[in-house]
Structure formats: C-alpha cells, structure tokens
Amino acid sequence: MRRSSQGPGGGGGTIRFRTTFHNTIYDVFRARNWKETDSETDWDVAWIDTGWIRENFDTMHLEEHQRINHFRNHYELTRKDCMNKNLKRMQRALQREDRHDEAGKYDFFPNTYVLPVDYGLFVEEFKHHQAGSIWIMKPIGKAQGKGIFLFSKLSQITEWKKDHKWKPDSPQAETYVVQRYLENPMLIGGKKFDLRIYALVTSFMPLVVYLYRSGFARFSSFRYNTNQKNLGDTYVHLTNVAVQKTGPGYDAGAGCKWPLRNLKLYLIGKFGVQATDKLFYEIQELVISSLLSVQKVMIHDKHCFEMYGYDILIDDALKPWLIEVNASPSLTADTPQDYELKFGLLDDLYTVIDVENKLGGVMEECVGGYDLIYNNGPMKRDKQTCYTTRLGCFDDRVRQLKRLHKAHAKRSSASSDK
Image (tube, rainbow, N blue to C red; front, side, top):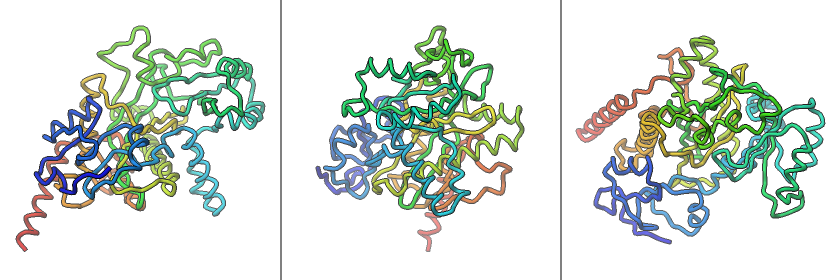
C-alpha cells in the first residue's frame, strides 16, 4: 500500500484522521477540527487496533509525516508471556554484567510460569510452597479479566486441564501464565484495588518516555478475603471494571474508580509525604525499567508511538507490583470524571506528537498532563518541588498548555525577527 506524499492535510492544512473507534479518541479528533477519512492509506494520523497492525503494517509504506498508535511488535511488553520473558532476560543480563544494583530493581513482578510449556517447572515450584498458597491463572491473549481464575490445589488444575482438553504437547492448547497470587494487597475500606497508569513512548531508539500525571485506582465491590471457599469470587479478587460493573449492587453513576491524586493525598495522610513519594517514584522507575527490558527487541519506527496502560498493585508494605501492561487501554468512559481524564490524556498525547508542528520540533519536558521522565536517560529531578516524581500530583493541564503555546509563540516571533 502506498499513499500520496502531499504532507499533513494533503497539503491543505487540515489534519486527516482514520479510526474505527467511536469513543473518547473520536471526540478528541473532532474537537481538534481534524477531518475524518475512511481511506486505508490517505491519512495523517491513525488510531487503530492491534489486529489491524498485525494484518496491514508490513505491507504499508508510510510517508514522512504519518503517525500511528502502535509499534509493530508492541506485544513484547503487552502480552503476558512476552512481558515475563523480557523482564527475566533483562534481569539475568544485568546479573551477568555484575550490575547487581540495577538487576535488583527488577523485583516488581511475581514469579511466573508459562503453561503448558513450563508445566513441569511450575509443579516443582508449587510443591515447595506452603499448602494452601494461592496461585492465579491468566490466558495470555485476553483482557478485561476474561479467563482468569484462582486456585490453591494441583487437583484444581488437573480438573481444568481435562475440561479444556489441554495437553502440554498440544499445539492447540491455549497459552496461560500462572503466578503466585499477591495475597497481601493494600486495602482501603477493606477492599482491594489496583492502579491504572498511562505512559507514552514516542521512540525506542533512543528511548523517550512521558508519564501522565493523572490516572485512577480501580476498586473491587466487596471486602477482600482469601477464604478458600471464595477463590472463585471475581468481584472480590479482580478489579477490572468490565468484571465489577456486572456485580450485584454496582452503582454505574459512581463507578468503581478513584482519581490517582485523591489516592495520593489519602496515602500522604496515612503514611506521610516521604513514604508516599518513595512509592510513586518506585512506580515511575518500574515503568522505565519495564520499557528498558524491551528496548532492544522492539522494531523501532519513527511513524509509531505507543500509549501503554499499566496495571499496578500496591501491597501492604507499600511496594508496587507490575500486574500487566495494556497496548489498548480502554478509552470508553463510564463517568463524567472518567471522560474528562481520558479526553485530556488523548488530547495532550497529540500535543506531544505534534503533527501540526505547533511546538516547532522542540521536545518539551512538560506538555499538558504529560511529564518527560526518560530521554535516552532519566530526566533530572525538578529542584523546585519536594517530590521526586509528579505522578499523582495536581494536574492543571489547561494552564500549562497556555503557557507552553505562549512560550512557543515568543520563540517563533524572536526567530522571525532575526
């Protein structure tokens, strides 16, 4: 496939977009007064699903200005088995190079096995743990909590294998990951929660990462417990909104989310500024470390960017754990507050990408709600604040964007006067 090389807007100035999604991303494109096109090739920006990338990307020729929202092999981080493989590989590589301090940072993911290929290794590991220890099984290619279940006995796996006609040497067997279940999550109001954090990668060579200040905590609907009889209760153990909204008594108006800033203020009130800042800085470091683990295997392409949705659990010792990374985090809003967050998230993303060249090619350290945290190396700490990360801090994105565009206009004026 090849498109014309007229440049953004086909030479007419109006950006043309292509998307099959009619949710918040569509609203952002229309609010920017961009023009929709259904052409497979004649567009300036495209927001498409990962299936389209798999089927079409290798046969396309993209022009200099075209931008698309996935890298070719995004799955190296977003597929559960690949993520585990790359994190372990990075950890081992650092250990071999005697960089033990850096290798020690890769302690943020639970012990994981890929089934059916690692079934024998998993059984040996299972036998070394205390009776009654809880494990969790997840299909590698599904989202929104589908196919996930908990167990504490090998006999439960045996029964499941029979039901699914699952054999270790069968090429048709659906691949799962099995992990030690994190039984000691931090609870608020007796309920389990996890975090959804957003990271934007504009380049892998060099690695350039922006972290969005806002995000949210997703809560389960019922009080947490590890009673063996309740391991099948997904409303207790899974925080996915797709699961929780089907539960009895779910309040669609209130939802099950809490803004990240509200959570941070709660934690500051309970644990203090220093402990809370350390936690949020470790979350930021977790994001960077995970991306470094796949940097060398990613197929870099200057036309591509990726907005990852990170799912992170905090345990009762204030330690963050990486649960999974999503290549297509949900952009459908379930409350007005959720819509405001996701609209700002996507609108600021395209200000960073800057297809309209309003920033003049300047890489800004702060764009709306996005903060540049890595640019071929970690960014230096802002000495004007007591925090080591802006994640979860107050996000006045509208005022920041006004200052940003005003500064750019001043630079442009000064340049034209020379």
